[in-house]
Length: 304
Ligand code: CP
Image (cartoon, rainbow, N blue to C red; front, side, top):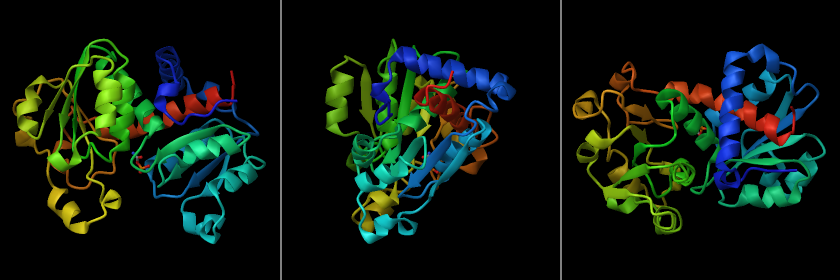
């Protein structure tokens, strides 16, 4: 039995296989409609979500399975003090696979040690979000036709942005991928990620506060939200929240085939005037999230 807590638990070959299955599901959805008949997915969301929870649920329904779960900690017995370990031990008797989001870093890992069914990390605090990364990789692969030879600008909250942490860990394993790390000084990428991933693998990267200066080199611009829920101090949030707002004029120097991505939800960081630009992929990205989660459920349930 296998869980997915960190994207690095999947080899490059396994990621390529998941992308291939997701592409096949997109091409032949009817062939997958009963693959998970009689299987149940439990979505245990201790933190708010729209895309991740509902795409997991849609994924399981489209595989012919069923879904149970909760969407906030207050409606579960966590509100009475029940531990994550006890919760998943119980849920293991009710479901075949669990997707869990939790505000505390490491909670899904703790859950995976107590559960007797696979546990998928659906986002843990400011740490990791491996299934968002799978959605991102499928998006990049479909938009660009490759996962190598790319310059990726990640912009916004690189400190607490769990989607960025997982994306860098995944993309750093492909050939000739370079990063531009664009953030305010207070929201820089944590040094452990620079040290353990970028420097350890000899990946080329630049660090800047200036999005316009970085723009001309980018093949992908991955915008992120400054996350109010991760700040201890409202004043800091208010000062930093609008550090980057992508507007059509900021794309003047961008490549004609730039792909603009965002894990969403967005607040102000991408103007709605960008939505009609064919380079904006963020709504396609949300749809790819459902297909890659279907592929992941099949893999972890060992359904052929
Ligand atoms: N991208 C993402 O995790 O969105 P939700 O918070 O809506 O699940």
